[in-house]
Image (cartoon, rainbow, N blue to C red; front, side, top):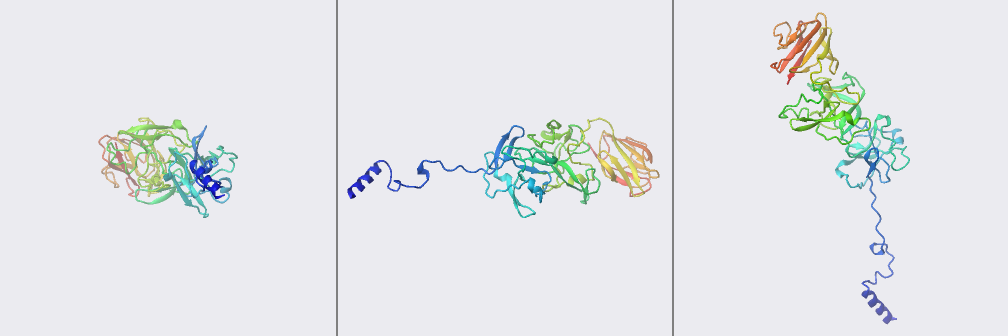
Length: 398
């Protein structure tokens, strides 16, 4: 028997095996079976309608919620019955996804949730099978999660910050009030704006040396994909002194330099409400250059203020205005007893009236027309002839 055992060991050695391999029941690499496939917890799938979308490990579509503008989840209580939370503690990612784009938040209900580019991720209960995308567009606030959105849509309270640093809750008409407003952001939830003195495809704000770009940075983005509520034909691109700026309905798009974090929309109040509005599908097409005069209706609030409407303003109190050299502005004044005078000095009386390009200066019930000369000073004012509280600043730009 001893002799047979030694012969067997010799035979196994010739075959390149060891006695440990012989008769082993270990299902390791030596058993000829491949290791189990790694589970990919967030996958990329190509959809015939939406292109590249994010799914969970079973192929079910993931979604963004427009009300999550700050990066916190606003889908709570019964909402999560229809839109279950997506959370994976140890993410594994498909090729083409970047770990840096993912994060985790602790929700107000104490649950954990996975985020992508700051957007909390959800599933949809009515997706019955892998590959379904039934949740996109639901209520105009749910969108299938994609890695390549150029812009996104959010719904949130507007909180404007004026030139004095005062913050005020605003409605979508830029009046003080509490309301949820639908508006456009970049892919990571940073608010985008238009400038009411721009024209169709023309940036009238940015200096040629970009010295004022930090105040209102241009939105430099190549359009890839957009939420389904938007129309790709509304977007374009313009050259701004050698750099490309994305446009929407002809309006050049900007950030606001004082929006320090995702969800901020302070720019709607700067320097006064309505000069830098948000954008959404209801935004009107930008006017063509030279396409007509800009018109303001002017009334009064006793002897304490002028009230201006038009060109993005709605009953604004003593608003500061930005006027462009070469453009014409009409002030339809209906303020009996309160003559409206354009002046070089902020004061009552008729002295220092600025009359270059102005007709009917000092009208109280009629139209004051101002074609801004090319040599107009950078700062002018409008004043009531008799009441010092009724005044505002006119900033003149090229």
